[in-house]
Image 1 (cartoon, one colour):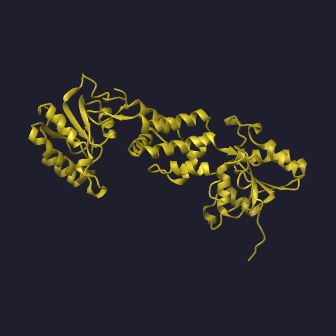
Image 2 (cartoon, each protein chain N blue to C red):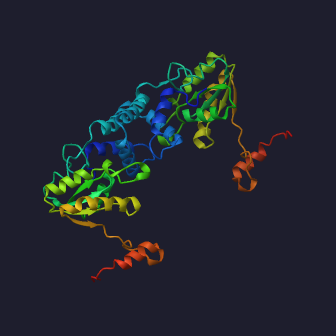
Length: 203
Length: 203
């Protein structure tokens, strides 16, 4: 007697449990849930997932996921195309868009330099960023919005060295205590940098 | 600007978040994970899920999920076909099989009588259970292995009334303190019933 009463069920459980953070037990629960759904729903689900592989494209400008040749942000002429925010992933774009505070465009690297994961600068879209800056004659501001860990800092530094010769203004995200944060619970690195980078008080 | 940069991504996130216990945020994480996988993997995933809708069958005998007309348990002549364990779902069969202690066959009800969810006796496979018992001339033991809550007890009682005229032996799971459980932490209903149903000590 195999663990699963059906090879088809077992295949589905194995496929679902290959997703990150989904164990065998949850996968079985999800498979049995799908089994109880009307056929159309299951086909709709499978179709929506297949479309991720088949139909999604990447913006020719910023490498953001897109339904067409250009993403909706790059295609929007009301946005400031001289302001390029460099991020690691699609999710970062969505996080920044959700703030409603940014009116420039993006450049999605598709990862971060990480020798331990075997990701080098050539695996990222850095060449295309350089090409965009060249094409604009350097008349752009590039915001390096990468994470604050070693990999993020390394990647930022590498990109800075690559783009600096073409004359863009290069900035990075403000870092310091979070708004509303208590001094008592701040880590000492953050607190120390917040003092070093103190700003003029605007009442 | 929509919340999602791509309709295709949005469709996938919505499909994935329709699964029970998967929120929008996890669904986005899973969709972006799938997006980074090779095409074949995504197709394999979608195919395995589609197969749940298209290819899975239910055993003509016990209503267990099955790849063929009969499930592997009902098709196994080394099992005791005069011992029928009645369970709510496929998952219960898998739990009991995992114990390795049971050599009889099963009958999967496909649910439990629950007026609040609109599930009546006619939505379950009770008629087919009655037919199996009739076909065996009543020479079977039926183990009612349903949950111990009100719905489970009601369903057990209803089934008992339906099958009792055909003369099977009807039993139910032993209930009491779990093996290794401490008296101190047992709930009073379980403890009370464990005393009432006390058994001969076998050293």
